[in-house]
Image 1 (cartoon, one colour):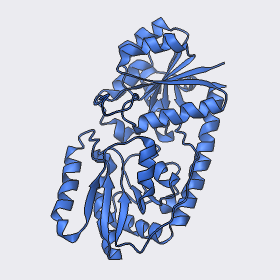
Image 2 (spheres, rainbow, N blue to C red; image 1 turned 180 degrees about the horizontal axis):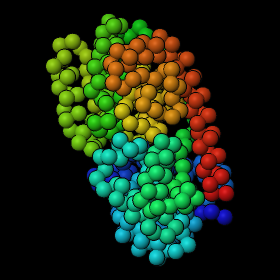
Image 3 (cartoon, one colour; image 1 turned 180 degrees about the vertical axis):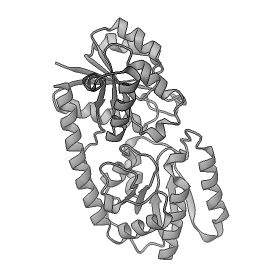
Image 4 (cartoon, rainbow, N blue to C red; image 1 turned 30 degrees about the vertical axis):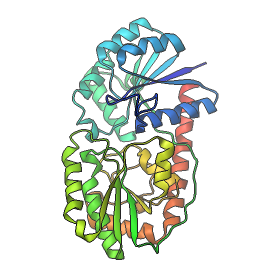
Length: 350
């Protein structure tokens, strides 16, 4: 029987006085936890650990004796992978990538490491997006001069899972402001600035004040200019009454409570593979304006062009006018997507 062990790297800013034992409640951890719980529900033995660095992996493998170790994201050096494979020659190692190629372009030596991983026995590249699967297959086929069947043994599609726990929400369109949640780490490809401008334009069209909610506590991948410009916009427009509301990162249960307070959610980003934040908003009954760039479960007709502020405003107006339709359609689509995900994971291990 398969025995799965998910291993994640603890965030560099971990502080035991401020953070829980798992570190900050990140999307990567939540993603792994969702899949871990789903495998257990399907009778597949699974464990999940967060370690300080790759030198702590060996101890976890000796402790749990898994058949499969899933390393979430690219953080273990090829040299360490080689060493671990020698120590545990019967373990299958899956390095699971959570990015599309545009996002991966900002991660230094990612492709060098991916190429080197495939030189190690029993090491598999896992991807969570169909487009990335095709690109990885082409890259490794050409780099290693592999036949199609060899490529298929070294690259596997393992999409994200999300628990199907949905709530409903009562909307108050009579209040004098509109709460828009544009949550997630501040990165250039998250497109916060244009979404803020669209949200301001939408609030103006209603004759209401905007409260634009973000998580400015996580600045990643050269995101400092993005948050600086975002803050400056609202400072310059202070007299209008439109406001930027900055929330620190919080445990998932508390974050879901915050999501439920929003009138609209926005995730009109430039690069996505799943988007847990969007799923969190939808799960709490909040209508979502997602990106046409591709959140795989988001209903395309309800998504906006991330380069077109007017299109974003139009989709916001649609969602605000009929939030129940937006929520019901996206929840239905998310359920179908995660049903397929569950089948893929269970079949892979059984």
